[in-house]
Image (cartoon, rainbow, N blue to C red; front, top):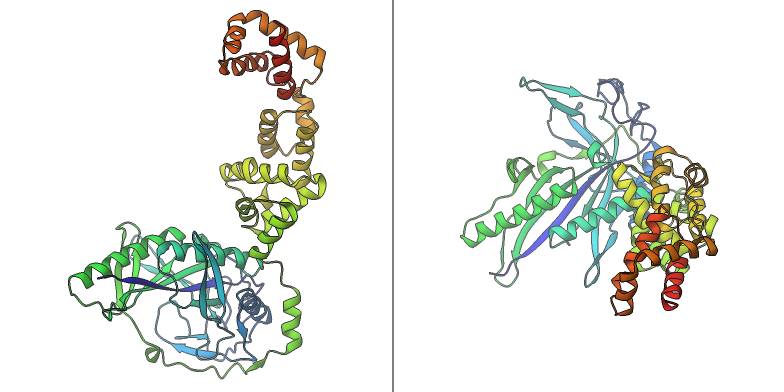
Length: 476
């Protein structure tokens, strides 16, 4: 049997609005339990919802970013089901008339681009949160009730865990670029459900779709897909039937666990939300949102490659986050050398950010400070090794490069007469290295450079040292 894996994703994204979607409660992560609540989001009798315009703006923005068709009229529906943290006994969402239809996102594979088509993007409210104690008690925090969500539903166009991961990474970067969500999976701002089954088109054999709920990391998505892929294949290979199921990923067990048999649309008894009247999406409204759209990651990457002569890899790294791309361009506005700025930002700066577990916008190292450090390198006032040490201290203290260099006396020695004297002394002390170099042992020059750097405490200009060594050895 030759099976193909079909994967579709349902991604829930919390929108970064000031208020909740149907009331004026603060939309803010954390806070004392059950303090960001009111009669509307608690579902108390007589409380009426009012749709938040900012939530709709953000949803339309996402639709435009993913090439969707925007509906002319917004209609809301009720999705009826029982769950302990669903205060009203139904969720206000969209059924047959989503705000955004169709759309797509391209992902980069080793053999070229692949288009992942979207089914829809619709708006809805989030539920509350259950907190399970060690004593076996379940507590409810309703702060999250009514937080605005968009649900992004793809077609089953992905065929591997790697493709799903690439799609989620690009989707996450795009959502962050357009500023509609902080997409922090650890805080639940982005959660993913996976729908997966296997098909053999030639033999007309397929497994039933399994839905894996509430995956909150890319690693969990990959592991859950790989596990389900193998489970479906084993069942089909043994002529065993599969059932439509909803499962969850158990990180401890390293496997999916059955939650319930999968429900169909009829089980939710969808009905029109009569408390929210239909809203027309006027052209002027849409045009205004379109004007606020930033340059998207792929377009920025292509521009960086063309405008700054960057490699595809470097441009991809620099545009992976909007803040990093903006930082790169700000540094460039001060120093005007795309190659040196790219090398330092993609190398030492990102390495330090990872070590410090910081984002570029939170670091003490401003764009202007990095530019000043690179100016010192370009002017040969400090060498690369010294600059790396200075950068580390800049991260830790927030001091400028000039301050650190002056305080510690790190200025590079570029005075030729001073270096000639040091080179002469090193050669006098190491006659064997001179003979080794003349006999073709190139490593000898590295040893001599090391001795000079040792005497100058790493401050000698390496280019001048190499030139002087070659010249002085020839004279001996």
